[in-house]
Length: 360
Image (cartoon, rainbow, N blue to C red; front, top):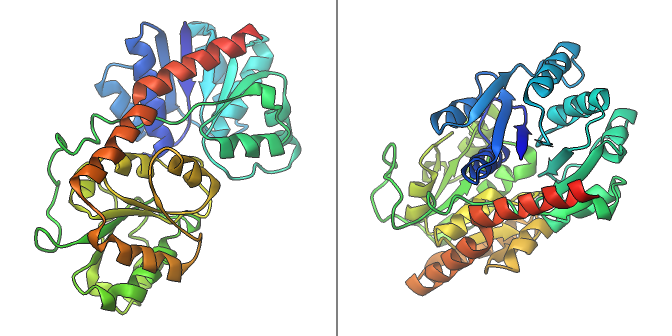
């Protein structure tokens, strides 16, 4: 098949990672794949390094006519059988291009639980017959799409993949820079691009609430935007700020996970957390908010849950990590992640979804 994968966004994210894994996997299976992504973005750079055919695109705005005309030119030149879009602006622009060309192969992957705005454009995007089908990364996302008016018959659930080769404790590379404490110091790891939905403030306050009961423990935080003034101020106001290490954006996440005693996810809403799956692949115990998508992962692999938003409950789960990690438990976590979240399963299930949508 001739397949276009398309999304906007310059910075690296879980959605960018999934699009790259999918594009490369489809290419390896013999499909002709074109990746249409943001000009000068991180995805363009990484895709080029592994030999994926890329057309960098200036996403000037969701309804920008210049962008849409460029998309139409790409369509005319490549003549795809499938266009799989992964974010909102790409969704809108390819919807218009599909209308121009009476194209019947537009598929939308939905990764987030945010409710789409209920304006005419948004309603048209999700209810238009031009979209052949939706790929939801979890049952929770599928349910949210149905709340938006999408028929359940047009939705296929395909779990996002984890790069279980990169996130492998037996082969991961070392740290890009050393941690500011001695080797062997216990720490809980929290990774997330800074956003109110991610629960950064909950994690910091939960750590503060139990720090006196576990004097050796540290909290390590990494993610885009974590160096912003508001969050740095929140950390500085902690009674235990000297034991909270805010690393900002890091590329050595597997190495950090290998050294941590546990990973925590405190999201208030989540489509299907990549960092949870990556932690499990590393054999790292996970503490997660009890939201529906996290519960889905918990049905596959054991996770310690806390009441979403509860500082007290999360603090209790932190203390339970003192004696949690052992070799057999870590092995069980990794085996489950490899079995259910491997790249091969995601790619094959996506292809099955494509074929199913095209038959209708």
